[in-house]
Structure formats: structure tokens, C-alpha cells
Length: 352
Image (cartoon, rainbow, N blue to C red; front, side):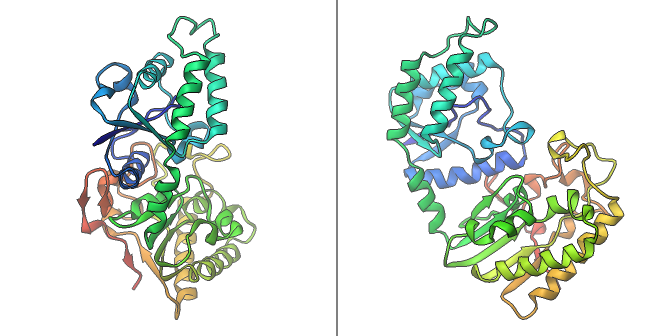
């Protein structure tokens, strides 16, 4: 039995970007979906489906999946394809006559999206496209809700006793048998304010946390006393994390990005790609690392460092970063769900 993973909203069900964080995370979720459905699941590229390069009828079922980052508006969300591609893709999904599953698709979001589609169908510029009508959208919505496997999917993820939790960089900590909860755009400051326990299931054997790189790039140096802020955050980080699993690891911050590197606007904040000088941020990163190490002494918390293989003299090695991005390329992960490769040279190691 083979299931096709498709999307109903107008973003690519990627292969969004080769060796990119979002694509890798989708492959990680794919493993969870396959286990929940007890079927092989294959990602179907939106544009290939729309242009007839993929025949959905060759599959036993489809699962309409709401990728977690699709709820993020603007450049952090998924790339929007051309309208004609999106409409053709929708028609291919509507014509599918076998089992329709859905995962993470909420009724309220579907209703809002359907209303948007019906408005677009009246736009003079796109009026001639083969838009679905309300009856067709409602029928597909009923099928999707009846085939909702979100609970099974979450049960698969929650059953694991080994979790990696953090911002989008947490994706790089995935390995077989581990669940990753990567919350795109989440700062350490807000995660601590919310309480790390709300992102972590109970009774974990191992938990791995990866927050703080956004804070370093954009926020810490805006405080009047950055050193005090670092100490307070490091102390609270260890305090909250240590109670969430028998064994806990916290990633120290990633290497500095070369200031000459061109970054996508998605990573800018308040009109700038970063705040403070590279030297100032490097000092803060080292200060934070040492504070984490000091506060974790005598606890169940281990501080882990990024591998030397991704570091240049002062920066990330250029070839280890996504194009115009600041995430580690997926071929520089220790484990990759997309390629099924294990690269021990990219292991995050305990601070000595």
C-alpha cells in the first residue's frame, strides 16, 4: 500500500529546497506519517502533480498534510506557486476517488481557505482558471475530516522517549528513533517564558534542546546589560531543562555567520540581518556556553558543541550552510531522514 502526500494550500509540497531545513523536516514527518498509516508514504511535488507528471490514481490513498511551517506568514512560510499550478493541483486532488486521509488539517482553517478560494475564483485576472466550486471544496473537506489521522500521528511521535526540541535548527538533531519538535522562529527567551515543559512530553528518557541562536543574532545585544541577560537565561535554561528527562543535553550556540554573507530577508529583523558586531556576538556566544557549562555542573544536563567539521576560522564554513541561509545544510547533519545517511563527522559532542 502506497500513500501520496499532497497539500491543499497554495504552497509547494516540496522538495522545497534541496538540502534545506524545511525539506528535511518534511522527510522526518514522513516517517511518523508512514507509521501512523501503516503504509509507505511518498512526497508529491505540487508542480509535478499539477503538470500531469504524477498520476495520483497509481496510489492507494492520499494524505493531505499541513506542514507545521505553513502556518507562518511571509518569507518563513512555504513558497507560493503560480495560481494556475495551484488550481491544476487542486483539480488532481479533487478527482482522486480512493481513500483520503488528512493530518494536522483543522476544520476552521479549511473553512477559511475554502472561502479564499471562492473569492479568487471571482477575480477577473484568474476567472478563466478551472476553479473548484463550493460543493467540490465542501465534499473534499468532509473526506479530509473523516480521514483525519492527526491523533494517530501524534501518538507515534509521543510514544518515543527521545526528543529534540528547539527552533528551526533543532531539525539537525534528528536521528532514527527520535522525535523532533522544531518550532520555527521560536526564541529562547519566549520558550523560557512559556515554560519548556509545554513543548516536551512527560517521562522522557532523553531530551535535547536547541534554542538561543535567534536571541544571539537579534536580541541579546539590545539589552542594556547583555552579560546579565546571558547569565539569567543560561541559569533558567538549565533549571527548566533538567527536570524534563532523565538525560538532557543543551546545544551551545552555532558558529558566527560571516558578515559578508548575503542572507534571505526571511532572516532579517527590524531591517537588519543581525544586531551587534560579529565580534560582540562571538563574545556573547562564548559567555553563554561557559554559563551553561557552569550551571549544568552536578546535574543531569550535558552541554554539547557543534562539530569542528562545520567551523572555519571564525565562521560557519560557507559550504556547510544553505544557499543565502543560516541553517546547516542537511548533508552536514549527522543523520538525514531525506538521504538516510549517517555522517559521524557531524556529531554534536559534549563540552570537555
